[in-house]
Length: 432
Image (cartoon, rainbow, N blue to C red; front, top):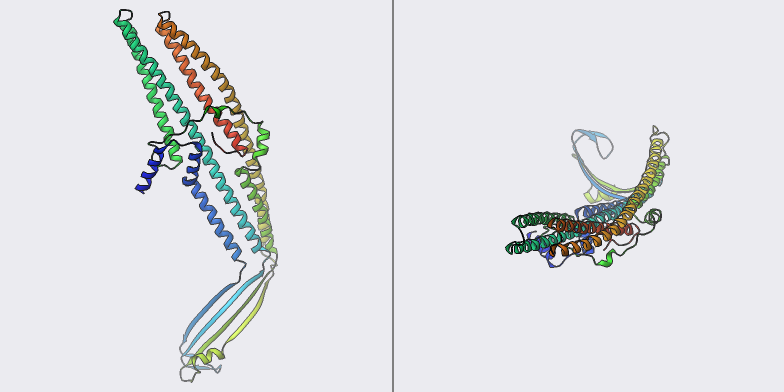
């Protein structure tokens, strides 16, 4: 185990992971997905069991009895004697008709397997979305850290500049101290940003079931990844998604299961016909009497039988009727579950679409604001360096620029995530 953890940790340091790498690794190692896969395996066994129930059952038996005192002898008279009886049997039985219950049980087990398989896909869907969300959080925190580091560079440069001016008699200690305080605050901001980045990497590493986030890093998407257009409205996306999303398909399968379960319950009204047959023989001894040899008796006493058994239900204390009624109610309940799943899917798509629409507007506005703030800061910086602007004006312009850069980073990755999420609802691969 220690060797495995070490190899995984070393693998995380080899190269940055892109989103596809993260998703594929999570699908292979996430415990929730593995648990769902085991549910599928259990349903496969249940299908095999249901199919085999249609086969005949065969059993063999042997018994040895000892009797003391008065008993029945080989001449069919009662005497006081000790007897022994050894018997062997081989029997088989097969259900010929039981109201189609075996047939319906096979179909039900197959539907159960289908539902479990779809639930596995839903678990994978959930992991994909969670990994993508955690991945985007890393990208955002990484950019916020880059902004904080740029702020440190700017403030550190100004501290050195003010020190030089003070040494030449053109600045004051107060100005230097004020700028050093600003630099200290910038460093604190960077430390907080770095901690946030580490936490976001830890969150993703835990989703991937990595033993440690140390050395783990992600690929930053290219600029082209953000050049995407919003898809059609939520109604169009829903029409595409409702036929492919596991959350709906699973409920549709369970509705088919509930419908088949009604047929299974109605089978209780029908008769059951069984075929049975077998072979048997025995060996008998009685004290005081001469008995034939063992194998001679086995041959003499050998018998065979075959028979049919018919069971016709006449009155079952309303049990069959109530089972059918219960099955019909379960069907109605599952129909409501299906409608709920469709409505929830539409709400998710609607929410994602409006989030994407808002993030698009925010992204465009943040882009314009960042450009304006950068131009304003460049002008104030030039004035400040020429002595035509105060340190307060410089810091205000710098802070506006850095805030605009942070807002742009947030809106950029929010827009990227929301638009990719909408594409994913439409059946596209979740990637940047």
